[in-house]
Amino acid sequence: MWWLWLAGGLALVVAELVTPSGFFIIFFGLGALAVGVLAALGLVTSLWLQWLLFTVLTVTFLMIFRGRLQARFQMPPPPDIDSFVGKLAVVQERLAPGSVGRVEVRGASWSARNTSAVTLDPGQRARVASVDGLLLAVVPE
Image 1: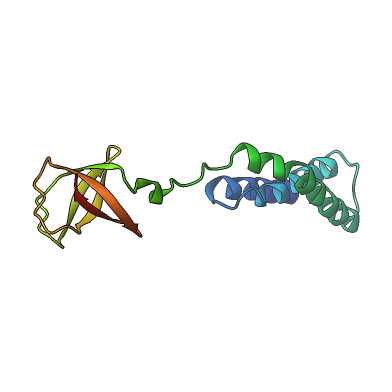
Image 2: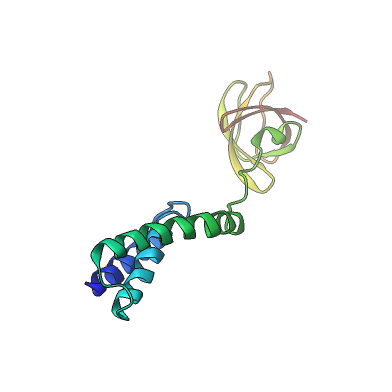
């Protein structure tokens, strides 16, 4: 029976590595691996005790290590797109008044609408006037 704990534990650890679960599944895997090792060594033989140890170890691992792992591997916050307001944009394609095209801001290409009354030509500098979702509103500089 010990080999089932080890196989299940390994499967859960692998599942954590291939899914974005936020460090949750791995602790069930570690609990199962620990019970599998204890059962293989003959230290825990009864099934009810194995399940009790699995539960206690899993909860203990969760409480001790989950916060630390999340803090260590936390993704950086997404960029604040609204901070683009007032930034310089370089027009990448001809933009007639009210039309949508591409501009470059901070080295990345963005969709933009020309909100001015004049046509913007490729290479011309413009300013970001506002942001609506992922669409920038630009005006000539």
